[in-house]
Image (cartoon, rainbow, N blue to C red; front, side, top):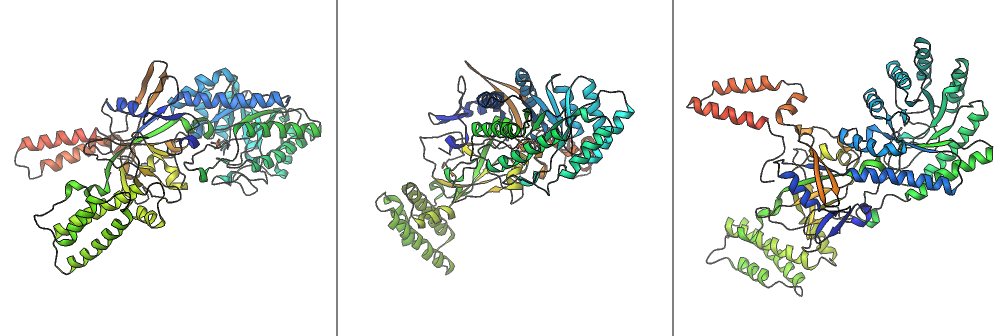
Length: 608
Ligand SMILES: *Cc1c(COP(=O)(O)O)cnc(C)c1O
């Protein structure tokens, strides 16, 4: 079942052999994919499900508010979405429309993101600004405040504070709130742990914090210091580093209040809430639940404040991955199975075959659940002998091809018979005889964290679930000319796919939980553009496909690396003019065809 109960969070279910969206009319991903492709889109397709973004926002607020009530916590909960996790308009618009009821805000880490946050956040909902800033970016923060935004600029270094002082003296704009990013000695765990710890890229040390407070006081700005902030890294796999960080940050908060930072009223705990990507029980990533996470945050902060007799601060989070990872599914058509040639239909049997080939035919005809191990051993032996005969010139190329096909078919049958309890020998064979599935997609473009960080994404076919057993040990190849564009078969966490005949049937694979970070991190390696994308609104009585975006065509992709598309066409045209075509007609036909190709995207346009 491809571990669907581990990673899908009940968002998708398997029913009648299909994977379905577990919401209202429960359409299958296969029917949605077919519908989307009716308009002629070829290549990979991102399906967005905004209801899954809404669900995560609801869960986040519900859990924090429950924990606040249960712990009789006095502060409020607020959240912002960090734009770097997914800036695409169709994502942010769906999010803002739903988040409005909670006062859900946005977090910006660059000037471009800040402009988005200023234009898309409802007045009153928070905006936080992190990352390295210049004076211009800080001025933008003042402008946002003047517009009426509840904006907090988080200081990453003392230099930024000096700019705030400068800008406040130079203009008449309203002051933004000021936050301090702490450099905690506690760090997160896992791949992204670098965001925390004493050697982290961001944040102020204890000494700098004291200096910052003094600098603010000297300039009459201490009243603006409202928030302390930390972020111990994305995809926190374990809860204990967060607890340590909370104790450290909580005590820093209380100390700052005692040190005179009277206006301080919020702790921002950053992001890091993890998503389960594992497909196999032994590889589960996340060791805590949302409810444990929220209980710990609320309880620990409350506990520290009570002990130090300080009012409970408001709690802010900046969870990004948690909110959007699940909303997007990448659908990729399979173009080819590499052992396609080893099919029965390719046999070229003769009237009279060499005895070894005859024996292989017999073994293949009679192999059964009872004898398959013995028959498979015989077949492997025969193939070995036949190779020797070929090297000595006693059998011909057709005989050799027949023997290879027959042995392959025998091994395939044996693997099917042994699916439930393969012996170590069969396991090895399975690995050696893995099938390579070529998918019409670029892993560099669509799941860059697989390439860069070896992050796994759950993957499964859209069809034959439950009916037709997946028997092929599978590795996946993308269509880039790069050997890193491969997801190899991993015996520890095997992926088995179906033995399909792509001449007569279609076969799609879906990669799940690709909604966080992948889209803007994706790169145009080999000049493959962003996949096609569509938003799917699920209704009681069906679903609607909206916001179809087509993958960029060759002309646009070529222009994105600095060429002028029209000059390229002119260049091609003049080369055609000088070429050796026999007629003008042929030249103009070819040119017309070239222009047509330039209007299409880079993905392969076979039937899939
Ligand atoms: C990246 C980032 C986040 C989001 O982290 P997730 O793990 O996606 O929740 C939040 N805050 C800051 C400061 C970040 O840099």
